Length: 355
Ligand code: COA
Image (cartoon, rainbow, N blue to C red; front, side, top):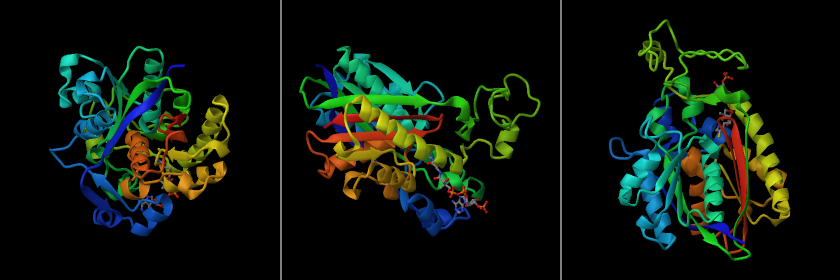
């Protein structure tokens, strides 16, 4: 039976370390508050004017490609998950192709907009391509340059302290080995809560208020004409060009959906929670990961957390953590690895794979 396996994996985080103490110089927060609520001690920020989501992705991709034992030109499809793309359009997939210097092979490039679960959605798509025999070397990247678009005033503190920059990449390849590869992926979404964790401006919504939205959303529109609707003066004046998060609500949903989707994946793959050797959760918040760990009955050495060092890197967080675990020798061939994520959308998912 043809499956897809992770043939190569790599990650890149920028050099610049930003501690909680550094943030206290810009906003009203404390190291104690951030550590106690999120587990985060520090995060990395990309270098202004030098690094972008795409350049960080390329550094991670180069490592993954080398470890997969192929030449860059042999990548036959690119999937790029990010919520902080270099451009509004085109997406980062084609920019990565250019950054890697492989425009010549004209491989397809697909961008995924599923925020924290973007890597898992990408993994599922890549898996289908490889299983069906359509592609042999699919490059999947999750990368974020959050630092470019955060509100560093006290107004944005609940969001800003959480996020960090970085990139992770894998190359998915076919395998016919019995005990290897992606066993299953489960994907879900619920758009009823789209604005609970969102970056709505700039956008093409035009101030439209959908009647099915649970609560009134202030889109930042005075009376403006077509052509002036994408970014309004009020959005700029009132700091409406930043992400918004209803933290407690997101927390509540996350601790419900993480275990639910993991149990679904285990059942689908005919496995039990006791069979999991390594759990690599999306690094949303250490408290969320610890809650899920307890629900699964896993020991500390069966869960890989690195949010303490890198913060929440959204689409990049799972591949960075998975790569770290792999490099540390914490995942061995034949191990059952469980990946899971929950985030904006809401979208969430889980994957089970044999390393
Ligand atoms: N520093 C200090 N105080 C802060 C702060 C910060 N960085 N951010 C918020 N606060 C304050 C709030 O203003 C509030 O003050 P008040 O009680 O005087 O109004 C107080 O801390 C509590 O805020 P609340 O939002 O209820 O805190 P919380 O315990 O829910 O923790 C999060 C906030 C964001 C850490 C938490 O809700 C969370 O992690 N949610 C999930 C987020 C997540 O995972 N997002 C990514 C999705 S993938």
